[in-house]
Image 1 (cartoon, protein in one colour):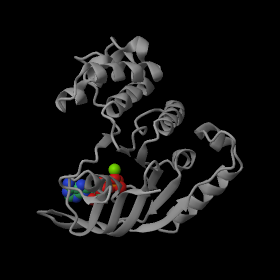
Image 2: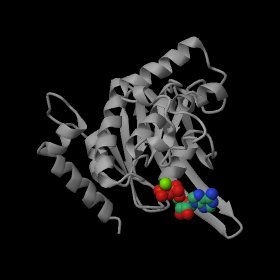
Image 3: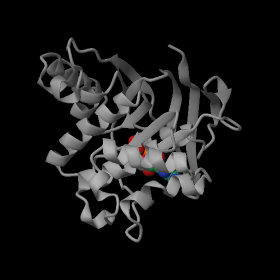
Amino acid sequence: MESILEFNHINYAYHTLEGETKALSDITFSVANGEFVAIVGPSGCGKSTLLSLICGLHQPESGWIHLNGKPLNDNPTSIGYMLQHDHLFEWRTVYHNVLLGLEIQHKLSNETRQKARKLLDAYGLGAFADSRPSQLSGGMRQRAALVRTLVLDPDILLLDEPFSALDYQTRLTVGDDIGQILRNEKKTAILVTHDLSEAVSLADRIFVLTKRPATLKTCVPVTFDLAADTPMNRRNAPEFKHYFNLLWKELNHDE
Ligand code: ADP
Ligand code: MG
């Protein structure tokens, strides 16, 4: 498989009036096309910073980042970003929220409108297209936010703790649900999470970061011997505990 993302010896620090905060230290990895990677690490270690660098919001101090073999500036690879808060607008219906990105990118057409409808239907929101966001449950809102991102057909999807604002029960179902959607769509995804079981249930590989400045401590390939490799089946499989404990140890050795 070809890599869609290469992160090569990246260093990054924030500079403020109070001084320098080193966030990332010599981080190198690559992500294959279609792969689902989860990133775990202590709070404040630099996970969100790492995603910001991938979408070009910050420039590395040293090292380079390639998307599809090319530097970030002037790169045709499209990136989708999903955050903890869904940022749906109450003054728009669900359908018109989903169209927002298309509007901004001047990509509204009959074809893209149809695609929006199709995705809403496919992911259980067809009957809510004309509802307001406040009429949806937290999980449905997160799904609507995902549809808004997917309709733009991103080549790579960055997810920054997208389920952490949801209560535990909802987080489980929505996390599994969205993981399944991304697999169906064969999207390359990078998921930042502090929830180890979420990482194990969803990812092909898990990167463990150390505390700040983050270095890449270890990469854990995740394989389950399952006929149907779904997040729920993973949670019930014997391997699950093994991966969970392994990650737990890696994270707590850092203390
Ligand atoms: P994480 O997502 O892993 O919790 P972040 O990447 O958000 O961590 O932040 C890493 C470190 O950089 C933290 O110590 C944070 O305080 C600091 N930081 C984040 N954003 C800024 C900023 N804009 N200016 C200065 N320091 C920042
Ligand atoms: Mg963060």
